[in-house]
Image (cartoon, rainbow, N blue to C red; front, top):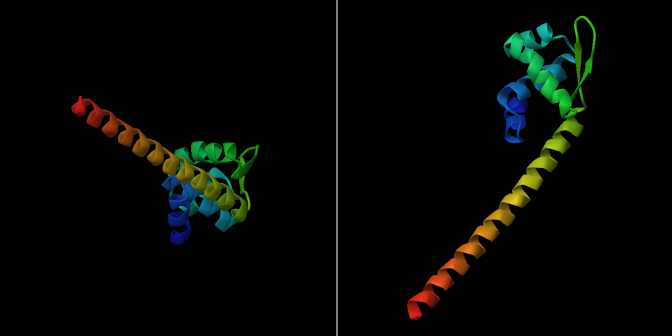
Length: 116
């Protein structure tokens, strides 16, 4: 499970998000108490972490007493995280390109001013 947690973190989840999701995948579904016991995430934090993951479509919440949390299929979650990482990487490359072209333009402008 440590490898799964590490890989989910590499793909953009926080440690607690990765631990909660990995625990749910391992147990199939569970209450906050069961997730806490399986993940080691403090029980009060399980609620907000689970709600955040639900908001991203990574888990489903079956409302009741207690709420039951169900993980989305790992392949779907990993595909979504990978797509988000790819999009961020593309934007970063474009950003670096823009910074590079702006820096080159600034260098040329300064060289032109020195020649005058």
